[in-house]
Structures are given as C-alpha cells and as structure tokens.
Image (cartoon, rainbow, N blue to C red):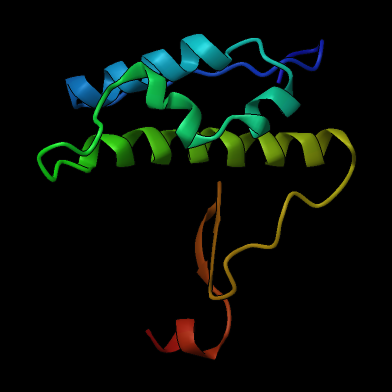
Length: 111
C-alpha cells in the first residue's frame, strides 16, 4: 500500500503461464483502492476466457483464484495494519514470521 492508500503489487513465478496470470492481475489491480481489490471475485475474470474448464482442465482457473486470493489476503493485512488493528489470527498451530517458523500448541510441537 502506498502513501496515498492505493495498493501496489508485484509478482513473479517460474512458470511462464503463472507469470502471465500474475502480470494480468497486477496490471488490473496495481494502484487500485483496497476496497476494489477485495470486491473482485474469481467469477469476474471469466470474461477473459482463460482457463475455463473445457477439457477437465481446471488448473488455470485455480491459478487465477489462488493468485487473486493471495492478493486479497495481503490487502486485508495491510488495511488492518493501516487501521491499527491486528491483521488476522495466525494459523493456530504454526506461526510464520520473518524470524522463522514456530510451533504453537501441543499438536504442532509433537510434529
């Protein structure tokens, strides 16, 4: 999120197809208001006619969905940070921070 409250995105992938999907989503959402990013649904991307399940091929649709969901999660986190709120509850048994991965709870510790 930039100083004006607009979302800024960048993405990359080893896969050329995924890199292309990421580039399209970044092109569409970079500079958008956070609310606009959160309003976008996977179904809104159907008109792009990419990866629609024709021959049982669902992986392309999943790529759009997964990249969009990741962008929206990051947006929610930055909005919460901007508003002085906790971004979200971490996964109950695994906490990932810049300092590493830490087990939380007896189940995770036993693993």
